[in-house]
Amino acid sequence: MSSLYTKFMDKTLTKQHIIEWLKKQGLIRYLLEKEVLTEEQLEHIATCLHHIYRWYWENLPIGHFLTAVLENNFVEASLRADRTNQIVLPIYAVFLYNAVPMDYRTKLCMIKH
Image (cartoon, rainbow, N blue to C red):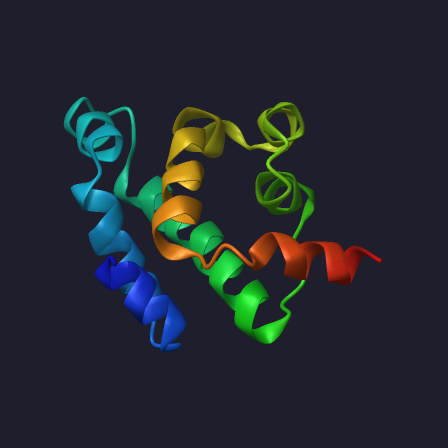
């Protein structure tokens, strides 16, 4: 079990935890190293990922992009992503797999109906 998942489950996950996790991801390290991604863009990605966390625990409304991500709708997510998120879309899959409880899909279905 990852420390990110533990923090997610004990409701202590912060945006800073997510930034630290992002910086350990190969794709993010590469994009930062090649200056394709800025620290400001990294902050934006962390904010989006933190919105997933807040949606899960606080029922924070999420937009069309994050809804598509949570629905596992790659085409819709790709079309709705801003430029930054288009580049790092695979990171969302890694985050969902490693940090978010799998019942998020059930939760999403319950909210939509």
